[in-house]
Image 1 (cartoon, one colour):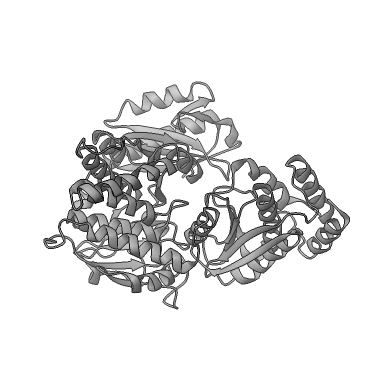
Image 2: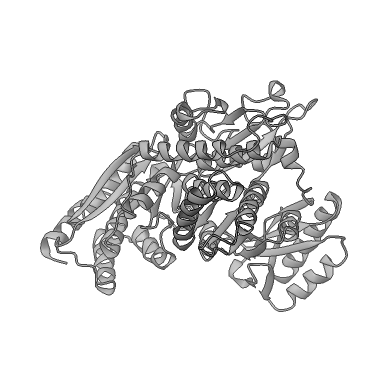
Length: 560
């Protein structure tokens, strides 16, 4: 680090002293905390993004958001060159940067890390970071602090993309590093065009008896509703009504949004008896999750939830159908195409959904909890589908898969234009362009759900009845030290302390269709318990009995 760089860092970092008595941790959600204490963190993550851009020699993203958290919170996350999350190898450095107690300590950390990673801090290389924020009132000042951090690394430049959904920024980073057009207009055009291709390939366009084009969207009073207002002007075939759009109807994430709807299973604000029988969907605050629901007749505020497991099942059914059609195409075609399709879930996926997918003949694998693990595993397949029950997920197409699909489509266009295999190839290509290849995206996910329901002429009720969820219960047990529990097999088996897994297995064996696992929280000294069984009473009893076991082995006497 030369003197100019050293002096710049010391001078600027003195303007953003860290809050006293607070330790932050970078995880799947990046850094999140009350917005009032985040100025220093934003500045330092700006530095982190600039260093990452210099290291990778690629465009990096920085997004100011706290997703489904309350409006007084905010946060920041980094998008790597692929458009995915910051590599886990850099998370310890992110934590060290955020928690450095002084400017001198901060500069020392930067210098040591740059030397270890062979990052030149002499201004000889340029770096570009795309930055954006959601609609939170605190976002503007926090984004300015992040830009100051970027500007504190000589050669690094921040390009402000304005107010975006989190998936939009990730998509822009992905597109920019692929050499593609990457503006917000390009994003909207890509979604609307591929949605049109899917609708045009629909064999049932004249016989839509069960599918209803009406859709009511809960925008969580956040950025997603505002962006859907812009997108829907480019869409044909859907009658979209947006409520909680962020235009003053209510407070961000307060009794609205995908997180609220999925956890509470009640209607969000501004929904009710007037929506009986209509297909409804909720976004979360930064539009990277979605869940569907219906309002049953005669209910005061309850809903029928169609969660991320059901969205995954719908996508898997449709993609498998297209692959089956392609596999049966004429042997006269020259290009072999046998892609590996995989479905990725966590242990929190309802057991009924996992069994349903396996019964379809699909390859289903589990990963530890966290989107970063799901995404990484899905990327190992030619086509990988992942979702969490909370509505976060996407479909990944490998470059190899696309490199085969495109010439197959062209070959069929010349020989069998208009045939079912030709349409199946078109549908798969359209899905690869519609669904966000970087992260879960409520806007693109909504359009794929709608296209598939229309293609299959399904009502939301028929979709919801693919399988019946097993009753489940989740509990938390306070412990002195959560690290005393170690797990394996995607967090489904306890390795330490010895004897605990055997005791859990004995409890599970008492209940029909029983399943239970425990895992340490990533943020607090609690052990999380998840249980399923054939009845709600049995699931409750199983969860309670396993929580007692955890408490006996290492608890402090409380669970909830």
